[in-house]
Image (cartoon, rainbow, N blue to C red; front, side, top):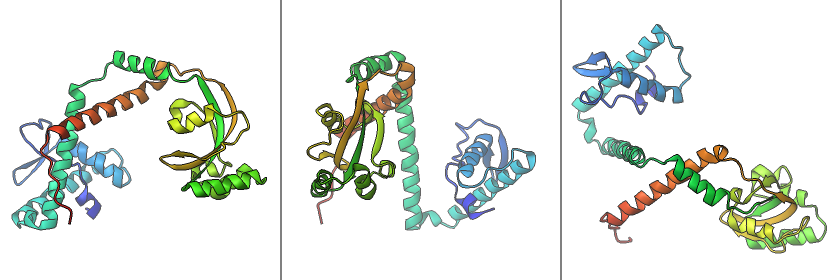
Length: 265
């Protein structure tokens, strides 16, 4: 059994009252179930090459599980749970598991309907600005750096050369700053607003600030934007609304919680 296999998380959280899957083995009276086995295999496959699905591999993996249970039992018997570092790690694992369970429970009891998603689609997609743009940009960390690059542009240095040399956006820098075609939903509002005031071929007269830094933008083309059909954006809308629900739940729970920060040192 490898050390990685011993340390795998997400394996046997045994509770005879809720795990009714078949018992594969018992170790000093402690069950290892089919569900434990499946959970362990999923976690194992994230860290090691997957084993073939056959009887021999199943026995090897089951033996790893047995070894892990034996080690855990021995650790409890030796009182290793009281070691500060072990105690903290167990506490973190328990809180992570409970937090994930709470989120799963919340989302299961606050389901998002297709009707809700279509209302969001009508509000955010169909009513979005119906123009899309082709542009390129140079992203830098400070306004002063952006102004210096603007001066180089005005002196005749090519935009693509400056983008490759200075842009912090590695995904577009190698392409001379090219961003391709995009709509309002694809970029930050301040970036999009700047484009709506520009003419084709124009470079933004001043740098545009976003949370990523300072952008010098050149508008290359524009065309009417046709919103995607509902089916194409449904998964994205679902994730967005799901995150919004979780954020609202978390904000409400924080308002009710008695949170006290320790005085600053």
